[in-house]
Image (cartoon, rainbow, N blue to C red; front, side, top):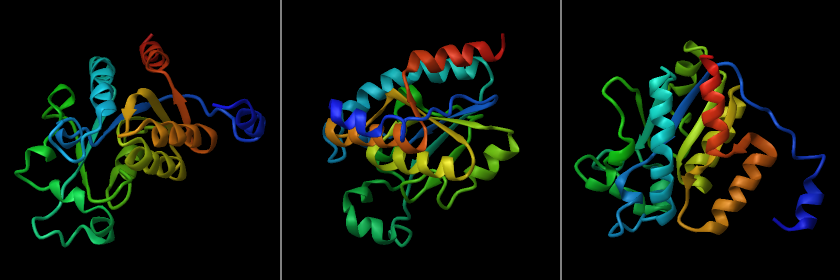
Length: 210
């Protein structure tokens, strides 16, 4: 980050919201299309994010903290893809039966964990995620997944707008290029939530049952 950019935002867009009392992990779209080098969606940094996310997910499970997953899945005729599939036809890979639409093995949902299927960027848009989190008493949404500039950003903005504290774990999100990744982390951290290191999140979780 350049010094003039940091100075420009300092004292205006750098407030911290912090952690709340009851978190949930929302693991967004960790699907094989983003981690398979043969896929047009392949993003090498998502591979790193998957690896970094596995220990955090396991910690949450061990402490009975809700772990909720999302995926993108379209009807085979793509009637539910709307304008997004016109803008990003590469997303048509996300149909039942396509290996690219499967969850990454290292962070795959357990049978007991909820999966919200979506057709657009935000995990909240067109789903009952907000109602579910509210019913669980959740006040803090810890976001992991991909991509930073798309579904993570959209979900962070909506989480804030629905009244949750968005926490984005820096090592546990990824994009296909570092420039949009860093730019969107900067924007999220400035205006919509907190971008924090995985170590800080794991320490926060460990104190919940202390």
